[in-house]
Image (cartoon, rainbow, N blue to C red; front, side, top):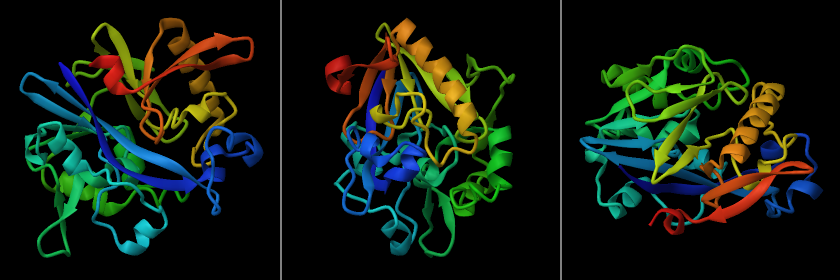
Length: 286
């Protein structure tokens, strides 16, 4: 097995939305905001090369939406999904599986592209199977009012219409082996229903793809919960459980949304679980 971090693009989000009830005077110490109260966000994906499978975890927000849509997110930098895959030695057509932690637009948007007629859509990975779970799929295609703007029909239905959509089976357990993949999955329901976080054994370490359970290093303290979460009190419980486990077992946490830190570890302190060490992916695994 070989892992490759894939940078799908950087953007900005409202700091208040990202930190919920925590005041700006506190969160800006770790996540500085610009004049518009926006903080730096990454769309950092992960590519797993193993045997005949080439699995991409999440896809960023893609390029098919309107300029007005992207204007809300102040995209910055030069990172791009296709060019990042190319830098790793692969093309979009090489990907055999796309594992989606959840179906919010900033995680699934890059999975779908416009057809040449510019009016209809198709999977951007024509040879891939797309993986979610049935409970989250139903949650996304029949969205609640709060999340409706994050679940875009054009990001979802082309996978199903192309016959490339597949569901992981789960037994409602917190952590279990993903039957189609060689890694465990941690299920979290606080941010959205049945978010799936891969736990990958690699080079003697456990690397956890944190998705939106822990967006950035600034979110480590338990009360630092996103305003975007549908069940913030459940997020508190899930974070407490997971971070205690991560600190005790020495997990390496791969941060999807932290634009300035790729991988971290956490430790137990008198104030609770806190940041321990920060790594680049390269210095940790190469």
